[in-house]
Each structure stands twice: as C-alpha cells, then as structure tokens.
Image (tube, rainbow, N blue to C red; front, side, top):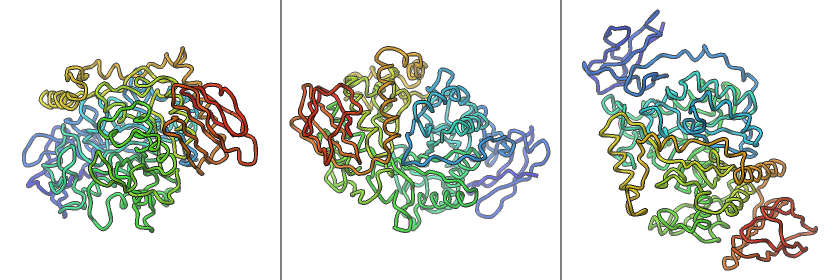
Length: 572
C-alpha cells in the first residue's frame, strides 16, 4: 500500500490524476494532502490538479520520463541491484576531481555512454567524477542549473536507473561520484511551486528572482524539501558527495542555517549506514565559516571552491580585467592565493566597491577545491572559450603544474587535460518560445558591450551551440593535444606520489615575472616572462634536482636555476 502526498497549503482542493481517473485527496495537518493508492495504481504515472486546474507533476517526482510539464512516474529504489556493498569513498585531501557535463561528455550524451569513459578517467589518475546537475530541467539538453524537479534524474540522460548504473560502474573501478545540486533557485519552466505554497520569499532577491524561502513563514517544509533531496541522492543513488551550487544566493537568518541543518542530517545518515559523504559549497563570499565545524560556530561543510586561485592565475595569464577580474592581475595575487587560499580576506575590492572576505585562518588547504578551468569560468564567457583558447600551450602547462602542485584539492574540467578544442558554450532547449527568446535576448544583452557585436554571441537555443560543445575524444591522441595529455599525466602521477602538499611558502618577483613555491619537500619555479630568467632556489641542507619540467632548464646550481621563457620546473 502506498500514498501520494503533496504539500500545497495554498490549495483549497487537490485531486490525484492517475489511471484515467481523478481522485479527491484528503487534507492533512500542516498544509499536506494525501490519498492512498493500491495495486496497479501504485506503479502508474500520476499528476495533481490544484483547485480543478490542469495536471501538474509531483514536486518530489522520482522520474519525469516526458519532461518537466508531464506526468510523474513512481520509482521503487529497492528494486535496483547494487554491486558496491564494500565501497568506501576516497579521502578528499588526496583526491583529484573531474567535472563532467553528461550531455557533452560523449557523443551520445547519456549516463550509459559516460560509463565507457570511466577506465580512461581511472588511468588518468582521477579520484572523483563530479557531475553537473542532472535533476530534470526543461528540454533535452541544457546545463542543468534551471532544474525544477529536484528528485528526478533527467530523462534524456537515462533517468533513475541510468544514473544508478553510472554510479555503480564508478564504484566498481574505484571512482567516487560527486553530484552538483542547486538549492538557491528553481528554474522558470515547469515550476509550479509558487502556486502550491510559500516556496519563495520576496524578503531577498537573487539573480534569478525571488529567493527560496528558508527562513520566512512556511519555511519548515521548504527546508525539508531540500534536505530530504540531499539525503536521497546519497542514500538511494549511492553518490559520495554533493556540490552545493552558489550558496551565496541561499539566504537564511535562522539560528540554524539551512546549510548547517543539511550537513548535520548528512552526518546522521553517515552514522546510520556506515559510509562517509562529502558536502562541498560553491561560494564567492570568502567565508571560512562554511567549512568550520559546527562546534566552532561554523556550518560543518567539508570543503568549498576556491575562486580566488582561479581568478588570480587567469587574470595574470590572460591579462583580462573585466568583471570580477578587475580585482586581480598581479603576481602578488597569485602568490597570496597559493599561500592563503583567499586573496580577498578582509581587504577592499574594487569590483565590489567594499571590503570583502576574511582570512582562512588555520583551515587546512584540503578544505579548498581549486581549478584553472570549470564550467562557469568557460561557459559564462560570450563564446565559451577554454583557457587554451586564450593563452599559449606553454602558459597552460604552467597553470596546470601550479594547480597540481598546489596544496588544494585539484579539479579538472572535462577535456582540459588534452587542451580540448571544443568550447563549452551556454546552451538551452526551452520549449516555451517566449522563454527561449528571453534567454536568447538576455544572453546578447549581457555581452553586447564586452564584445561589441551582440550578434556574435552563440544562440543558446541553436542545436549547433550544444553540438559544438561536445568533446572530440579522438583529438587527444594527436599532435599538441597528445602532448598536453602527456604533461597532465606526468603531473597527476607526480602529485599522487608526493602527497601531502600542505606546507606552502611563496616568493616572487613582480618585475622579473617569476614565482617560486615551496610546498613540503618540493620547490616549484615558474617563469611567466617571454625571456629566460634566473630564479634563486632554497636547497636547505641538500642539493635540489629537477624532476619534472615543461622545458628543460638552461642550468641549475645550488643557488639558482635558469628557466626558459614561459616554463615551469619542479625540483626536489
């Protein structure tokens, strides 16, 4: 015997539509409605009608086989046969994360097709596969950040069983899985929640409109929607961790912040089932409280993305100064990010026109996840250019080496390791023509000033925008792509054999354009100049030797190393 339940305190009458019938639902306490279903109806697609209106899907639907506007399909999670009974998640501090968009990762763009690439990731030295959002969103393809059915894996990717098979396959060969989830807004298309109850609040505004209601009247059940969703992915889909999108757009002045509540409930799940999970935040607040323990007044999350490292290195290498890159651009910024995680740690930000951030203090470096490329930093550009489209291969090799010898947890974006030629552009497949045109116009307006001609912005709705963002796997075996892949393999192998890397000191010469990072027993010397430079080294009580270099050093003595233009060397 089962029941269909819906939280809809705004409704006066709710009906369950299933099997060709409408069945009146009873009103329970707290704004809930419910009705029992038995036999065949318990496995039949269903929808709800509010006050006699058109059918709408279940906000907690497990599967939307026909998209965000269609009927929901019930799923019995106990029917899937898992093979990962002895699995334990890898330790984050010694890990390398690989961010992947299912739709563009392979030609087919499905969970099943991604399985065929797992052995490659394992051989590369990847520890965790991080999936961009897979919760049901409008259309057959998109980034996934405009999802509305938080509990339903996207139908075009392969639905619930497809995701389970991918996670099971990852665990079978020793890869963990992190899932990107979005709890800061709901997508516009297929979003029926505002008509059901106080899911949103006008107390705060986000870039996507009113904020999700985590602290206003009626917020108890909204918090439950989110926390239950997080637990579901970990429990029913066996994922090893969650990456919480843009938590700076989650507003909550409750005594217990919703992020702390979520982390506490995840720890309780760990105790119940005997597995450890990761909760990782994306935030531009430079707020160490996120990853400080709850006992010390923090939210108790495991790690957060370190944007300042990316911004500092990107701005220095590309010399871009628009948008948030206005706050970066010096070698001193790169050095500060390497040594202290945050560049903006309570200092004035020109871009924000205010003081920003606070020091990371004694937080260990493995609480921070760093990258030189990710979906945002590529895809939020007008044409979706990767770093390799903006700088030389020599510069990219320096960036990769700094990332993979840094004290932080490195994250790679799909295809980065072979300097993929495919851009990662912003693409959508909205079926509502009004919304589609609004997205198209908004994208053009956003970049009209920065690129001069708004018409140059790829049309998000065009099929070719999605198609050109797909990886070309065959290119990694040829020419400069194969050379870059070989460099990444060497760096990843070196890192895995030299961990931990957590005792960092950095010296640099802004005018001469060199940087030296001491990290544990190794020393990394970088020449960002177009000419050779002599860099002093710190041999301590022994002579240093070059173990890996993007270009062979011209000379090495106990006191200095002569480094070729635009190159990096690792000594020990």
